[in-house]
Amino acid sequence: MPARISVPTLLSTLRTRQATSPALTWYGPNSERIELSGKVLDNWVAKTSNLLVDELDAEPGIRLLLDLPVHWKTLVWALAAWQTGCTVILGDPSEAAAAPDIAVTASQAVLDAADGMVVAVDLGALALRWSGDLPAAAVDYAAEVRSYADTYTGGDVAEEGYTALHSSLGAGTNLTYGQLAEATDGGAAQTLLIPASADLPAVLAASLRTWAAGGSVVLAAAEVEITERLIAAEKITAQLEA
Image 1 (cartoon, rainbow, N blue to C red):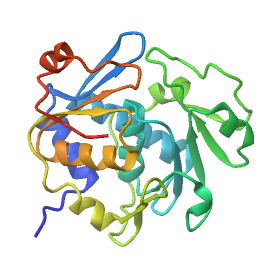
Image 2 (cartoon, rainbow, N blue to C red; image 1 turned 120 degrees about the horizontal axis):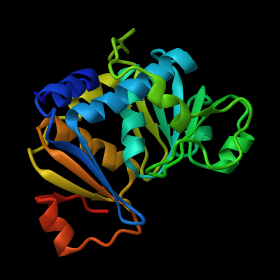
Image 3 (cartoon, rainbow, N blue to C red; image 1 turned 180 degrees about the vertical axis):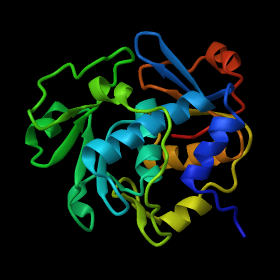
Image 4 (tube, rainbow, N blue to C red; image 1 turned 90 degrees about the horizontal axis):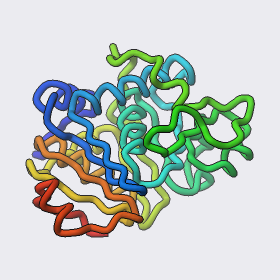
């Protein structure tokens, strides 16, 4: 039988067993490097979870379109959505069973076209607010998230049969919460390098498996050259193929 580790349990492990060791490192454009320990990653997820519940009325079954590229903030949002019981939708939302209730995006075009709840996520390392034109009804993630608590006390938990992930990307993926817990099995306590060219569903799955095994994830943006120096500096032991 595969191991079954829920996202809340995974976050608890990151917060305690990997509190001070790197859990997620991001290499972005313009020499960006951001390192999050397990505790800091959990803090970001907690803040985002609290924003979801308090500001956007998230609860189990809410459908959340995650319209973001491979990025450290994307992983934070996915973990927060699963901690609060949302269904994460990747790819074309028209191919999902129902329209999303919340759209999380870094696209000005998606913001301008949204007619429901929408969150603007600026991907800049030091962004304190959305850098474009913010529609009146949109939530500015960078401006709002820091005001929320560093801990998430928890709300209703999604049942195992609820849909955790619906993706139309690639061959398509659908996972229930029970299957999501099982997907954490099979990882290794390694430092896994993930290029931005990898498919987002594969990035999410590989990250969950790695964290569940006590490992660390290193993400590299498309503009970042993967050099021997980077591999040595981060002590990379495995790489996800794009």
